Structure formats: structure tokens, C-alpha cells
Image 1: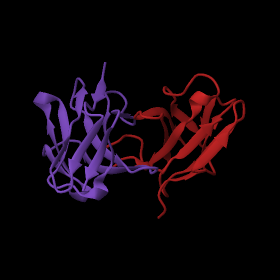
Image 2 (image 1 turned 135 degrees about the vertical axis):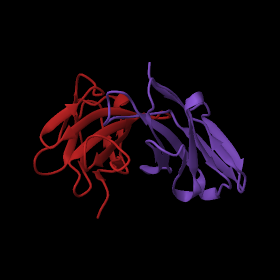
Image 3 (image 1 turned 180 degrees about the vertical axis):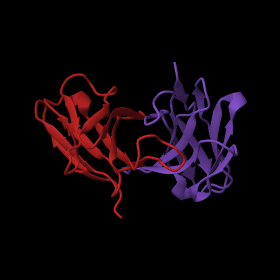
Image 4 (image 1 turned 120 degrees about the vertical axis):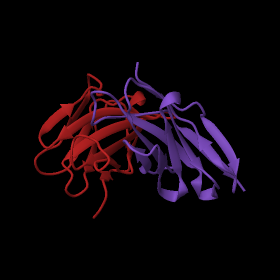
Length: 114
Length: 117
């Protein structure tokens, strides 16, 4: 079955350290891929998206993600984390035949220590 | 240009009551989507609507849940005879067109948090 997996439920990093959040998908074709961030009690904000073209995608707030077809992954990265990045991060895909429907992973909660 | 507006932000209901959640899409957006986020889980698709039409309701529970998006006014998600398991955050999103693409993405509202006592 088609699915999106975020293997890490909870990650803690020190402020200033680098960050990588993992996302894997099980999908027959090249999907549309997204990363969203949800701050506590807030809605979702789009960080970046991949539809086609350059596999390294730049987003807002200094985030980037790389689509690797061979690994079925779309990992989110940031070179230097700020305390304000503490939030929950969701990977999402648009699946085959559902070009208007997002399917979300279960999320990774990021904690930043000072 | 206000974003996607949802109200109420917080709603408390007793078991058996009805809950109505409203969503006003961004200006110029005619496509509305409802998602539910249960505690400690990701968002799950519920329903996709255009003005006066339900396009995809494959994620809606078969009973007690309904959604509409009338010609005038906000989209409404209605939950009848609520149970404790309905406690969740309900998010609305909108887009200008139906088929997602690089230029057509979903914009989410801040959500409505339903608590059933």
C-alpha cells in the first residue's frame, strides 16, 4: 500500500547544531512531496515542496530537502537549528489518482536545547 | 488577504451534542479540504469539496459526519451525536484549483480543536 513514513517520532538537537528529519515513501511513481511545520496550537505552514526538476529544494526559514528516488526519501535538513524551530514536522505526499489529496506522515517532534 | 479562517478555534461539547465547525477559504479559492488530527497522530484526509459539490468524501466516517460548501458562506463540517473519540483538531485547507501542482498548493487554517466531555 502507498504510505509515508517518518521513522523518528521525537528528535532533540542543540541550538546551532545541524538537523536532518527523515521521510520515506512507498509509492509506484514519482510523487509530489511536501514538508509542513506545525507550531504548538497552530496550523500547518508549508516549508517546501517538490514536484519535478532539481532534486534539492530550498524552502523557507533556512530549510532544504533532497529527493532521492533510489532511496524513496525526501529528508528535511537545516545546517544550524534555532530555538524557534522547535515544532512538529510533517512530511506529506500526493498519491496516485488523488491529485488533490495529501497523505501525511505521523510527524516528528523537534525539541531544541539551548 | 486573510488566510484560511476557521472558527471556533476551540469547542467543547458533551457526548450526544452536535458540533459545527466553519471554514472560510482564502479569497479566490473555491476548493476546500477537511483534515482531522487525532492526538499524537498526523493529519488524516476527510473530505474535499468545491462550491455546492462534494468531490471526494473517502475519508469521512460513514455515520454522524457531514460536510457542505454552499454557494454563499463558509464550508461547514458537522458532527452529530459526538462521542469522546471525536475529540481532535480539525483543519481546513483551501486551494484555487483542484489539482495540486507547483503553483497550486494547499493553505491550511489554524484548526478547530474539539473536546468532547
